Image: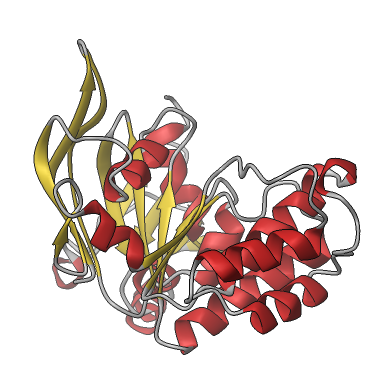
Amino acid sequence: MIVRTTALTKRYGDFAALDGCTLDVREGEVFGLLGPNGAGKTTLLRTLLGYLAATSGSATVAGFDCGSQSLEVRARTAYLPGEARLFRRMNGSGVLDFFAGLRRECRRETATAVADRLGLDCSRKVSQMSTGMRQKLALAVVLATEVPLVILDEPTANLDPTARSVVLDLVREARAAGRTVIFSSHVLSEVEETCGQVVIMRAGRVVHEQSIEALRRGHRIHAHLRGAFPGVPDEFAGRLHATATGDGRVMMETDEPLAPLLGWLATLPLAEVRVEPVGLQAVYDRFHRSA
């Protein structure tokens, strides 16, 4: 595991910004981090980088302790914060020159290529750039840095749809090159499209973890019967969860292959049936719709 946290906790007095957070990130994957504002995502990322000291628990990146060996951690990490601050008196090219000179892992030619793909005019001063343009400039620096771990906190914020698509392509290319990407976002569709594994955070805790592959196997079946629902057969017990109402309507969820279920459904007195993928939005809503 390139990232591992065990019961990681960060407290400010009586308030727990992180509360016993345990997770593992495998090398070479895009790892999605979801949760509303205040869920603990940014606190987790800053603790991994050693910018915040954990109250208790442990965290490592590439085998290095995030607290006592933070310099080694940051040498192996490229980080895009949620609000990147850049030198306002420099133009875009000057910013790219600065970071390429600061870190030997930051490839100047690659940064230029990323900026071009994002449609960024690097001749303009940072002070004259829009928020979206500054985001593109920060992305060019981070994604041109050849390190094992890339941490992106809301990377597509303030970007137009075309630039968002380019960023997702760049994330996939980083994964194809063998790098690990932690992708923190509020945009569920981007996470579902790009990530291999996802965790959902709430109040500083990891409340759900799932692979996107398993998520895509999930389906919800809405059935309207002409008679009473006979219940879930023993062969599907534990694999098919059903909720029936008194009017013959049944909602079922499963992450098992559909073919055997469809065969059983065909034996029921169906008036209507609809099958739909569960999707990440539905999973997320279980934990945050009523929060």
